[in-house]
Length: 350
Image (cartoon, rainbow, N blue to C red; front, side):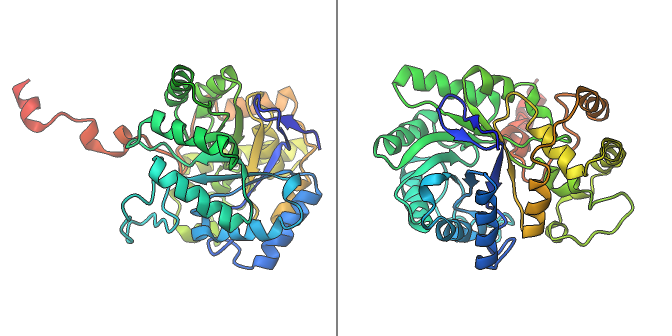
């Protein structure tokens, strides 16, 4: 395992990070089996575990906490907060006021809950799961700074943060004497390369580490999703539209023979691509079974030649997203039409 430095933190991390989203009711409800996966990853040299309080309503953190008994000091432990712990993406369960967001009121409580479930008194990396348009960045950085100084957090970061917001956060931190964001966790894969335009260059400019998520494009780069083929995988039951997007499937059909010509599985091609970018520190894998983990670990030493990378560029041009992941962050102005349109009376007057 060749370890990399997480931005300028001095923390050494593996090029693969173990994502814990699939541990618990949403993925693998068997705690013992999930713990076995975690231990196997650690034994293979992976030293980063990334979870979040909302994964399976806190169950993921509980499983990770059990798995780290006696091994906590050897792990770079990361968690995230922003959404309610009982987050319901369908909106069927009403949100409770002040139990989400990036405010001081919520983040202090959220971290305490995470520490309790994880069975530790500190996390190495505490991340804001998504931007919170209702909370001023100075408010968020202020509480994160206090949590670091209290010894509960070693470093702070964000996830899915637009490049302009990252720059703003560093400006505010410098002007207000607050601790700077040290990491960003954006989506990145062969099919989703949009962060190459601004996010990764900004991350590099500010000396931040990048822990990229969904390097397998939400499952599409496993090779188990093909055009004109019914699939019954675990992910398909959630109705993700990115799994049936014809544009994405067309690209996959071009990538499969490329991987075959290279003599490697598509998953290995995808993972090697994700960690080849100089701005990427680690790529987060999210195995649900031991078999999934074994497949990914087998590709740890795969390095892509410039010729293969050039062919990938021909299929998906640099800085380009083909479709979008259902889980990807949409800024408020994209999510809500009312923020893009003047009121009717103003339009009529014009």
